[in-house]
Structures are given as structure tokens and as C-alpha cells.
Image 1: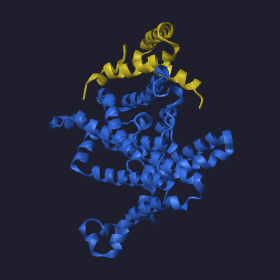
Image 2: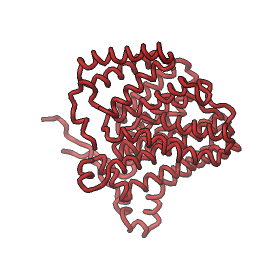
Image 3: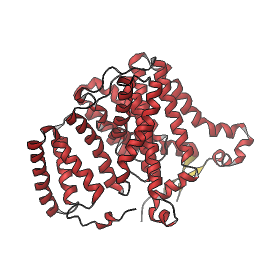
Image 4: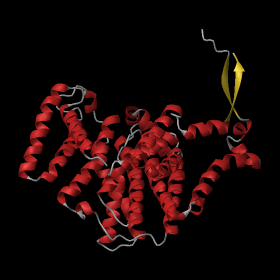
Amino acid sequence: MVESGYHVLIMSIAVCIVGGLGSWIGAFFAAFIIGYAQILTVVFIGSHFQMVVALLAIILTLILKPSGLFGQQKELEDRV
Amino acid sequence: MSSQTRRKERIDRGIKVRSEGLYALMSWREMAYLIAPRFILIAGLLSLPFLMPGMYWQRVISIVCIYAIVAISFDFLAHYVGLVCLGGAFFIGTGGYIAGIFNAYFGMPPVLTIPLAAIAGGAFCTLLLLPCLPLRGVYFAIVTLMYPLFMARIIEAFDIFGGTDGILGIDSFPSAFVEQYFVVGILLVFVFGLRRLVTTDRGLIFTAVMDNDQAVRASGINITYYKAMAVFIASGMGCLAGACLTHIYMWSGISQFALDFSILPIAATVIGGAGTLVGPVIGCLILVPVSELLRDFGTLRIVFYASILVAFILFRSDGIMAFAKRKYEQIERWTQI
């Protein structure tokens, strides 16, 4: 299986979700956040954890604040 | 104005109408009409291990059944509870690792590890998915798609449970015969069990949660409890399939969290017919052997495989089961407008 494509895909999904779907300003800031978080993780913890950060960011964002940092779709926030 | 002068009309067969309700019990012919499709499925699945030539194709039968169990769990969650769950690989991987750990590290036999993996794995998956249950639609799908990748990376990064090598030296089933009949039997129990479940009161609440969750909540029913119960049933089935897979391959590793286990069941559900619970089984019975047959083409395999999928979605988008059901229950004829 080709792994390199998934790497980029997961990174871009992580940036979109953390920034908020439908908000490109959010994507701009989230790209910095995810990028710095990854580099800091690689420097201080280990290179194995590089992808763990992105995946953890997706999962935690969707659990805690599904609309992301700058998301417009507030109807996601209402808990069923 | 359209220039059409004739159209196709569909009318229910007489025997289909006669065999609805209790009156079907009055004649052998109508009972046979009702029993025939179910009998073909059961007898066909049970005779498959005899019909297959050689060890290789018998092993394919076991893999078909494992994919089919994951596919019906996807179908149940997506079309009866309204949770589009792409976490087939998450269930398979969790069940596989739990079975592997208890077998290799604690020396339990497969008789104990498989039920244990189903229950403990189901509880584990439900616990991890519990915070995501309020999410709807594509957001739940994204979270469940990310969990298997996340688990694989965690195992790789912390180098636990054998790391990238996986857990080796797991017991196999006593014989190939036991292995095939175990998975076929489990599959049949799950198909008919789920069909029964969705018609009970509980199944009614599941369907209501899919249609309008706010109305269910307004009726004083705890939605999260029922969603969690549905996820526990589906993930328990997936984990059981994963445990069987581990014992078949005598190995559990990161590739059990591969996306194949999430994607192929969905493709099978689309081909077989969504929301029918039998459709996914038929879809797996077609897709997995086709994928094996195409191995002769080498790298072109994915091209042929994708073409078959696209052709199915273009020409039979409602699935084989819907088509077969229509042919079985209705007559078609052209009428003048």
C-alpha cells in the first residue's frame, strides 16, 4: 500500500478540522498550529509520534468542539 | 410532451400477496415461497466449504465471512441507527489484538479468547466512541475513520504488543473444517439475529433515532444509551470477526488496522444493497473472490477492481438485493400509455 499519499491526506484533514470546516482563515491558523505541534513533538518526544499528533488533534477537536476554531456551523455544537 | 408511448409497470405476484401474514401457513406452496430465499442463503453458505476446490479457496471462504460480518455491522449502524461508521478496521484490529494478547501472553485457548475479544473489544470500542456519539453524519464518519489509524500509530510509536512485527505464535483453529464452519455459523447467527433485532421494539427506537433524534429525546428516551447499545452490538461483531482473523492467520499486527477493513465492507454494502442486512453478505461473496481472481493481473488488479465497482454503482446503484427482491416479488410488463 502506498503510504505517502495517506500522510498528506491525514495532515490536510487535520488542518481543516482543527481550523473549522468551511473556514479558510481557520485553515491558515490551524496549519501553523499543527505544523508547530508536529515539529515540537519530533524534537522533544520522538519522530514516531509525528502522525499521532495530527490524528489526536482530529479526534480531540471533533469530540470537544466539532466546529473547530473558526467554524461557522454552530449547529454541530448542540449535543444530542 | 414526451414521445413515450409505453411504460413498464410492476405488479406484485399473486403468491407474494397471498403469503403475507398468517395465511401463508395454509398451503405448502406459499410456505415454500417464503422459505426458499432463506433456505438458499443458509444451504449455500453451509455447503460452500465443500464446493471450494483446494485449501486456498477454502481459506478465501473464511475471509469472505469475516468481511461479511464487518459489512453487516456497518449496514446495521448506518441504515438502522443512522451512525455512518467507517471504523471497521478499528473493530477488527481491536478484536484481533485482544485475542492475540490473551492467547499469546496468557495462554488462553481460542474457545475463550474469541468470546472474550468480542465482549471486551466491544466494550473498549464503545468506550472510545462514547464521546463522539453526539456527532452526526460525516463528522462521526471522520472520527471513526481516524481511530484505526490512531491505534496503529500508537502501537508503532510506543512499540507495545510486538510493535511493527505484531504478535506471533498465536494458536490456530483445530482444523480448517472447524474454522470455516465456525465463521459461517457466526455469520448466519448475526444476519438472522440482526434481522430479528431491527423488528423488535428496540429496533424501532434505533430506526427512530436515525429518522429524528430530537423527537426520540422529546419522548423521554435516552438517545445516547441506545446509540451506545447499537455501537456495542456492531463493534462486538466486528471484534469477534477480528479475533477469528487473528486465529486464522496465527498472527495479529498493525495491518489489521489497515483501511481495507473499513472500505471493502462499505463497497460490499453498496453492491449488495444497503439497508437489507443480507445484501452486504452477497456483496462480500462477490467482491472478495473477484479480488482474489484478479491477483493474476498483478498491478492492474486495482484497475479492474475499481472498474467493477464503478460499473456496479452506475448500473445497479440500488444493489443486487433490491434487484433480486423486485424480480422475486413482482412481475414487470409493458403497457400502452
